[in-house]
Length: 419
Length: 161
Image (cartoon, rainbow over all chains, first blue to last red; front, side, top):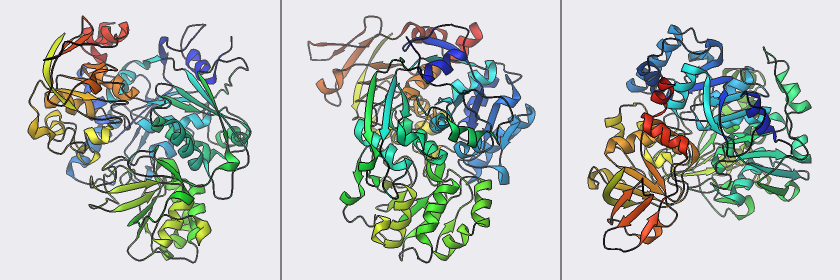
């Protein structure tokens, strides 16, 4: 009996010659990630356990991206804790200030995470790297501490659910719409403890930016990881970035899946997830008249240059509606510079946008775009839980960059076709 | 482990933003986090609960962010354990790793009202409700997770190896 890509990667990181869903394994970790919110607890645990040296200073990434630029004194203290640890241990991949980007955009961009890797991160959206054909999963701070100490971690081998996506998507429909639609179908626990494997003819031609958006939201269906079979598109993305060898794994034809789900992408409209769950999804034609106070374009889901190009294409020559705050967050300094050089930032400024430094702040209700009581924001982010972006009585509507840009112009949730 | 306490009921998909909103994540101090435990699910929770009480949730408890601040806040608030129909996987890991007892019971949540007094016996794998004859079963904890608890969490488990 064959293995899935997830099973193959996990097995390659153990000494065993066989693997099966449900089995507990101890596996070697290639890259371990922490940020300014989660790393301080991991550092505390690491020290409490008598940790003197991290398992491999080249395989730890510490990214100060959540409450940065430091939003208050406490946040500054947390960053200081992580910075001192990074200096003490000579952490190679430490990012802050003008080098920092949103971690899940930054690590693939820098070639730090690669196909075939086993990656853990004390951040739930670590599953993003599955887009590269890596096994990547979010864990807690104590898990991160254990990896810092030993370079290994326990895992339960997940069952896999296969999504076969076919058909040519309609104009404007992106990876974000595909994943929102899938979460709408299966629910926020539809893939609980499982691997979501994305395949099919639509996937084979799907650009890397869209794959990253989709893998990013696997956690919103409860999944352990989301994963794409690596191919020419992967190779094209990874080759110029990688500084170490990497491996392409693919699922065997006779691999076993707990479930297979087929989706005709040609039938999909643009999608919007209404408050307060990412599964509360409606097609754009069924959204009704939802007035918005803010449109946020950015995050680890949709803050890449491709997303900014889509938004700028729609905003060019147009302005955000009166009293709508348009906030654009290029996810990394590299993307920021690209957007600058391509004239996208000028387009955004002409449209009345605030351009934020790379930060996770607004997405999780930290800073740089908080909502007041009763306010509504359309956002290209990944979560719309109660209070996610501010006041517990504010509302977040999740969508792709095309809807976010069009909505900013019209002051209500809208399709670019309405412009 | 025998735990007795008064029940606070929550619904399905209680996410970690509801358990501890991100606006409070500029600290990892357990006492400070406890002050805001469950705030966006029930703003009055911390003024009403008493230490030893038990949280009973529905499906997918602890979904969303990986923040370990969530089980830390619940534990530091004095909640003795969480019983839910199912748990989101990162929350499940985190709870065992840092020593918050959690249990899965498919039937309990729908059969009791808020304020019910329950007794949970982890060795027996059962929950009894004061004033009810019915016994509710809890899903067995995988042996490895039992070992984690016995060792006092993941870091002590590693240290012991």
